Image (cartoon, rainbow, N blue to C red; front, top):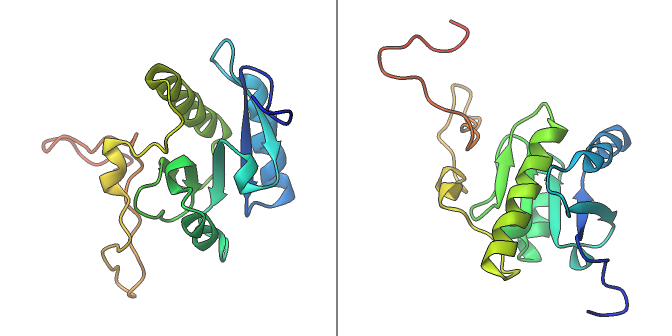
Length: 158
């Protein structure tokens, strides 16, 4: 480990594109990690982070992460995410959901004994192109954790 490496069990996370309020809420949730030895701390630079949480709706953020080839290390928050994203969730931001995604990534990487980018099988739901809505706008897909209704069940909320 280098001189600037975080202590064992501490994982660096870059937060990109969020408002000050959103950053504060996400950072506060880091204290609630369910993994016994996992702690998260924020860093500014992408290259200094093991993981990234990115506002996919903020202009330029997705382009920066794709250019840095970090989408496999990134949880995207917003209407859509690039192909190969580690995880994706829509707004409103659920800091505990983000934390669970990070905890799952840490557990998987620790089990595999590697720090290669994660591109889970459910990443197929994250496409570079989306079906078009009525006004030609992209239609957001479901989060990986959302379950479709059974064919004979009415849709949720209906």
